[in-house]
Length: 242
Image (cartoon, rainbow, N blue to C red; front, side):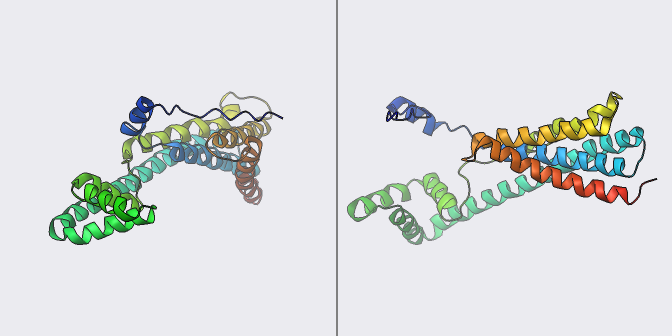
């Protein structure tokens, strides 16, 4: 059995720590990308399955599928943009509230800072000195309030980048179920189902890189979610078979 310590994910020399903490990577867009990819594959294949279940022509599959990819993808991107912008604007509003409180009630804000630090484990003289140091540094105090009083992320998200990440992922994954129909291959629906299932699994497996779940478990979970939605759509389509 190998008892050697695991290699850290990043260095911890003084210069490396200063560079990493002083210039963080910024707000990530993993959620936006995964959400867009899963929804793109699910909704597009649901349309493909529904239309196929109804026995309609491949041309109808393509028309409805492409319309869904473009319209629903843009709708998701716009919704993500609006939601992220609302969150960012609210964080900016709360920052202004805290700046005003620092001006009109500095003693009250100092008590809040002290309580936050106390709950982080500081006590005694160290607690009082740390409270004094942060209280006189206006922006440091505001950042502390935003993260520990309101539970907000320390870095602002970009609404535009989040929207673009969602739309791009939706577009790429959403076109996968349409490819067999686009190229006119035989037994297009069956191939579409296989390709979409593989896409679901790959999205889930890739998602495991940012979680503690095993890649195969995450892949199967995403496959089950997407497959269930497609099965429902296909079953509904069979009621309207022509």
